[in-house]
Image (cartoon, rainbow, N blue to C red; front, side, top):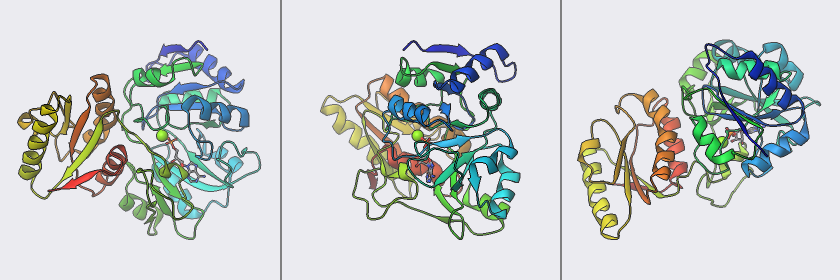
Length: 354
Ligand code: AMP
Ligand code: MG
């Protein structure tokens, strides 16, 4: 298949391209598009055949459900039932934005879109190109992240093209994703809301807006290919995720000085074996590492910048054919929780404590 790659500016959207993109989705095709979290791979959410095409293009297991993207609040009750007040309060505060909520689904959502589940994940993105595309396509766009299954989520269109060129009808290049990490997923089908995937919207923000505590679900064996001991609520969490091609180890410790010293020693060992090495560092430490490629995620205190850089950096190591990667670890408060969640999965849970 020929993939058309088109550039669009968020503040000056070319309507002819958007209408064409909407037609592709309406007729069962696939369009990759920018959102504020990461790039999405979109198809008609109400068409089971389109969803099957999404799984095939990504190489994604078909029991790992897709998120349905909407642009208007009126569309929510058409696809979701039993929507509690707390969810409406959260939507009022954080939609459009990086928040996905799970509800019982209505009849019109085909099982292919929900991985066979009776529940549906819904998000209203804020990126203007994403919103225009959803409107142009009739209202309901199923979209997982636009990467091949297992790879880091794409925050730039060039990484979408690397994974999906020839597998989708169109890629819309709208520049760098603003947030850089996937949405927070909150399950509203239990008595109390449960966070299935941490993200930019933190536990504390949910507690305040929804007026109720939000628990967190950790999935046994997540990211390391380990055995499942219970059916995961977020089926995606059981699969290997976000992985760079090189082996990635996270080094954690109370004192940054000791972490850096440990990484420096390990780098020497890897170099002696002739391996090409990389480090995920911060502005404060980047200068100390004798690696082939040292990448700073930004200042240690700037979580937004770290979130935005992480997936891009993992992809850049692949571009540079780095074989052995060490990462400093990050604080697990607030958004740091989402950052460490992705980093741990990218490392297959391989973390060393010093
Ligand atoms: P991605 O599209 O790559 O951001 O992945 C979508 C995530 O949403 C995956 O981790 C899915 O498992 C999760 N998800 C989508 N629909 C549901 C649902 N109905 N119940 C639980 N998790 C869901
Ligand atoms: Mg994904």
